[in-house]
Length: 97
Image 1 (cartoon, rainbow, N blue to C red):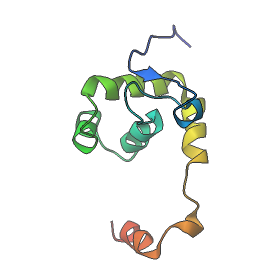
Image 2 (image 1 turned 90 degrees about the vertical axis):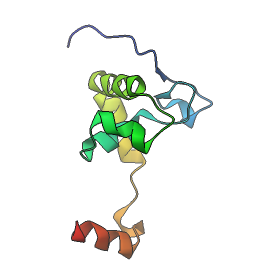
Image 3 (image 1 turned 135 degrees about the vertical axis):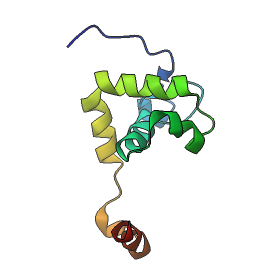
Image 4 (image 1 turned 90 degrees about the horizontal axis):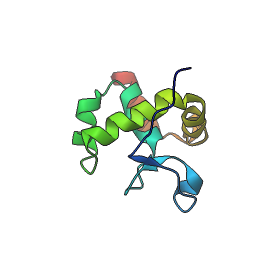
């Protein structure tokens, strides 16, 4: 892999989400941005859904993910809602889409 970059907007603080990477000055985890992006939301659109974030913060989170995929994928997996706990109305919405 290439050189690691500096991520001015991503921090790890044990007092926030047990040290999970978040956007500096917020409680928004990097995984939230990555999951939105994986759902097909363009990076430029994410600040419309999370208006407390800037586009620079979004791109920095995605850059962090590019260098730390295993770590972020782990956080995504451990925070996934088990299928049996998903309400039926939500499942129906997914089928209709």
